[in-house]
Structure formats: structure tokens, C-alpha cells
Amino acid sequence: MQNQTKLAVNGGKPVRTKPYPKWPVFGASERRRLLKVFDSGKWWYGETVKEFEQKYAEFHNARYGVTCTNGTAALEIALLACGIGAGDEVVVPPYTFMATASAVLKVNAVPVFADVELETCNLDPKAVEGKITRRTRAILPVHFGGLPVDMDAFKALAKKHGLRLIEDACHSWGSQWKGKGTGALGDCGVFSFQMSKNITAGEGGIMLSDNEEIADAARSYSNCGRGKDKPFYEHFVLGSNLRMTELQAAILLGQLERLEEQTLKRERNAAVLEKALEGHPGIAVIRRDSRVTRRSYHMFSFRFLPEAWGGASREQFLKALKEEGVPCGGGYPIPLYKNPLFMRKGKGPSFCPLSCPYYKNGMDYRKVFCPNAETICANQCWIPHATLLAGEKDMRDIVRAIAKIWDHREELKHG
Ligand SMILES: Cc1ncc(COP(=O)(O)O)c(C=O)c1O
Image (tube, protein in one colour):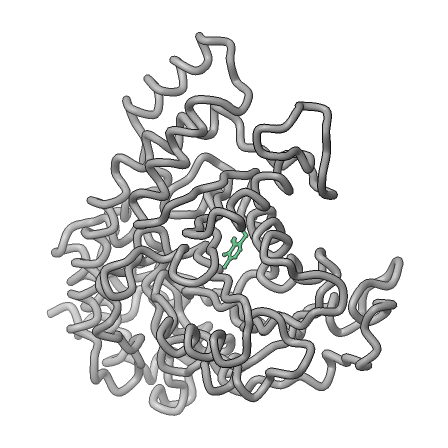
């Protein structure tokens, strides 16, 4: 009887010792494609990148794809291509990776934080509406963990206030909202192919859009400001060299062949976990929306409910879960606005917007407080996406490990 043994963290037998799958998954297709490009000696932007852009856009039901060096660069070119510039306000969530907000600063615009929903970890449309001013130019929601935000609500809000809607889809490769892929649901959207991501070339990024003007502008910004079908040494906008290489695109084409199957597998396994954990007195699973027709899982995340665990902390729970053989972590530890960058704790030159000559609103991020984001940062638990590539039986081990820790929760405090 498993649940009668001691917790592994206190010297008992762990629920499992067999490791879960590792990431990245790669093989013959990546090797063959990579060697083909390598042997061709043509490693610079060309046919392989174009093939990847077209296939990736198609997979997300988007018309255009513009690749670049990483997701951070993709955010910057997307903002520039949407005409966001000095002093413009862009509403962002505080529960995300830094790039969502730092890209806004990089184009001299001002990130304005609105709170996320406790039940989804996604940007709350009602909170966003409360942050809209005459300076607001765009909304930049993140499909956190691969769960699409309420795009109907955000589209209506963007239309009502004449705003751009840019999706940070850096967790949502293959996710769908009402049957259409994320990325081109709003004006445009961006993806990351960094090492930890569900499709990777070590680094890499792409912006998707159905809008030709935005796609052309993004290409220009990522390609030294060159113009479409214009001479090589003519430059029209202040761009940069952010091009993806043929070698990266070769790996991504191999990865893309597996993306659908892996996405569906993770989704099936996540459903097993969700069903088993729904209604658990110590855990809140993410709320699913029936308009989400496919969900990529960048991680399986759930909220630890501290009041139910008899004084044990999330950190003690996570340590115990790890010892039972389940990979896990606590995710983003603080809302973005609590980073030294925003708290003015850093040394060195002052930065925009706090010293931005175009912005005179006196933005002070030390006054920002988003209660849901604070709660989530303190209590959310993440199980990495590669874990969801194991079998259904392996998901049962996760459920058993959580049940065992729950049964022994009194011991947790001594672990
Ligand atoms: C939500 C989100 N946005 C943007 C990025 C930036 O992507 P990259 O690391 O490729 O620059 C990441 C990467 O972790 C991310 O998670």
C-alpha cells in the first residue's frame, strides 16, 4: 500500500524512479535536413527558411510568417511593424517572461501591467479595460502555458478602442482558438524556438500575421531595413540584422514534423491529470474554455492552495513531489514589475520609460500591484512539457505521488 509508506523526502520509497522523457526530442529528420544545408554551403537566409516560414504559418492557419533570431526579437519587430513607438502605452500581463515587457521598452514604448485571471493565469480582459488611456496603442496578451486567452473579448476591446492586438504566442505552438491557430488571431503574434520550447532549434523566433503590410514591415525591420523587391543596399527603416539561418530552419522543419503528434499527446495526458486532480481540496487546476479547440502545453500547471495543506508551503510540496520522482518547479517567482529593472534597483544608466523623454506621466512601477499575479507567483506549480510525452500510466504516477503527499501532508513540514 503505497500511501502507507513514508514520503520519499522523509526517507520512504518514492512512487517512481523511472525518469520521464527528456527534451529536446530529435532524430533522423533533423540530421538529414541539417546535413543537406551544411553540405550545400548555403547557410544564409534562403530556401530552407522560406520553406519553414510557409509550413509553420500554414500549420497555424496564418498567411505570412517572418522568422528571426528569437522570440524577444520577434516581439520587437511585431511592435515596430504595428507602428508602436515612443511614449505609446502597451498593456501587458505581469505573469510572463521578461521579454513580453522588455520588448515594449526596447521600442521606447511603455508597458502597462494589468492583472491576470486566477483560474487561467491569462491576462484578464476586464483588468485590461481599466488600464486603457488615451495613450494606449496595443494589447499584448500571452497565451500562458499554451492556453489561448479569451480572443473574442480582446478583439472586441481592441476594436472598441482602436488598438493593435499582438499575441505573445511563445508558449502556444499549435494551440487553436475556435479552430484557428494562435499567432494570427489578432494583428500578429510571435513564437519562440528557444531550447526549452515545444519546438526548438536552440534559439529562433517567428512572427505570424494575416496582414501583408505588417508582414512586410516585420521583414524589413528584421532584415536591416531593406525594402521588398528593392535593391540590396537601399534601407528604408531603422532595422537590424535579426535573420534566422538556414541551419536553424533545417532543424525546425524536422521538429515541425513531430509538433502535431506531440501536441495531441500532451493534450491527452494533460486531460488525464486534469480529470484526476479536478476538485482536489489542495489543488486548483487551470480552467478550460470550450472555445479552445486545441491546446499546446508548455507545462502542466496548477495552483497549490496553501490553506488546505495544514501549514506546509508550496516549496515543501514541490520538494516532496520531486523526491517522489516527478519533475516540477515553481515557475516565475515574482510578477515582472517586481524585477529590479522596474523597481529602480539596478545600477548603470537610467532606462526608459522612467527617464523617457517622450513620456511625462511619471510612471512609477513600485506602485503597481496585481493581486492575482502575486498569488500565482507564490503558489503555481509547473510540470515541464516533456513529462507529458510519457504514457498514460506515467500520468497515473503523478496523480499517485500527489495523493501520497496529500495523505502525508502533516509530515511535509518536517521534510
Ligand atoms: C512568454 C514568452 N515571451 C517571450 C519569450 C522570449 O523568447 P526568446 O527566449 O526566444 O527570446 C519567452 C521565452 O521564454 C516567453 O516565454
